Image 1 (cartoon, rainbow, N blue to C red):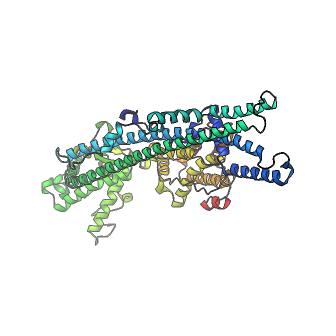
Image 2 (cartoon, rainbow, N blue to C red; image 1 turned 90 degrees about the vertical axis):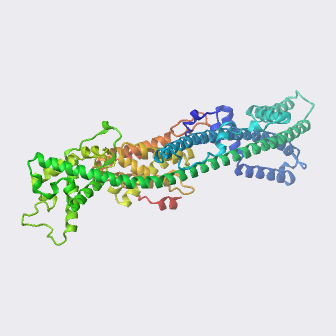
Image 3 (cartoon, helix red, strand yellow; image 1 turned 135 degrees about the horizontal axis):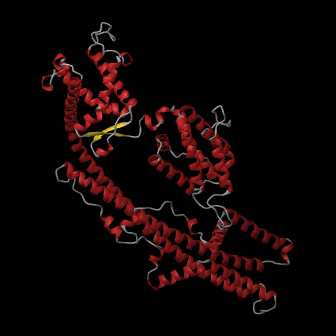
Length: 603
């Protein structure tokens, strides 16, 4: 069975009964089970039997098959024997699917337990780092985790214990196959044919002996079916127990991690308060030292300005102004798409370009100007006497003052390095494109609808929405929300609520118009608000449609000759692709308006 090292990659899709349809015999068995195991089949049988009895009692069939309806009884025996074989085949398929689900659940639980153990070890290392070698919370793992690893997943065959159980398992395996079905059906056909050809005279019509054997076989089959149901029931009970214990163990570990994190929060809050104060003080002194060095380089006399005195001689209000500037550096960096973090790798050091440095300098000046006005409310907002040439908006600063401010902004990475910090890009700044805040809520909702519409439209191309295809769609959006290189696509995929807006009975023809209009409207919005993202957005919608189309095999005859992508799905993909195209005016092609009510009314 799987070990911890083998559980890193969990199955990519859920196990279904349709996965057991492998080969010609399995396809035939699935088709028979589907056709016979339906309410229309029951209605047909009731109509035929009732009609035959009425015609044989009062109608033209009275001479052919009068009461007690010998031929109908013979036909009933034949059909019952065939149905018993079909039931056994279906029961065996269900058992195999259940066994595969048990293995998948076991492997998933192993993968989760492995991750939980890794997280607990990580938290334990953090405990010891935060508390100088002492764990903040002593607790033990759930005992089921160790027991789970030494016992295999429950299988139906495990319930066949003892000689009687082994005999039952052997009978179920042999009788629950298409070959047993072929033999039972073929024997009856051959027996009848031998009588018609005059080869056998032992059992003429209405084949009393064959009916006797058929009834006996049905009795045996019924007992075997009941034994199989008992085996499946006991195996299901064991699987239910194992799933319950898995969930209980996972919840126990989650509670342990939550308790650890809560304990760590108290220590981290205390350390953060202390560290923030220390970093702010050191950074404020570094900023002041840099300002002194700059004044010395330009030949300015430090004694001429109170702000250029040594740190120990500064007025407290000037020190506080430097501390305020130090506290605000992180906010200004975040505004242009950077993070201030403890130094982790000198190789990741960055240098601001001209636009970024000017943006930082402008932000610094605006914050400083606002602080000055709050402290001196009686001063005019823009003095014209020349006594405070720096107390003006950025646009009215002299070229020399702006250049000096930009130079100071460029030195920020060096200043932070002096106190053990560095600057990193966070991937959410202006250089990484637009995000949700660049669109109105209504526009953003339309963009989200377009993502789901692209996938659901393709899924409906074959008549009904397939669970595996929707699973593939959701998985792709989740992965894109983390791994896609464009911020716009990441935020859009992360915002999806996975709502298909489908109502019962909705078909492709009902859904096509509103879905394509949602895609056209979304493409128009992106072209208008973020034209640089349009190509990536169009490609992402087509990728969604393609992923859904290739999620599973469809078409063919009873599953034979099925293909990952059918002509209907290919046509739906092409429709999605065309809907993303804009006319020369930058507008999507006209169509009906998308609303959730559109599908409701059409369905």
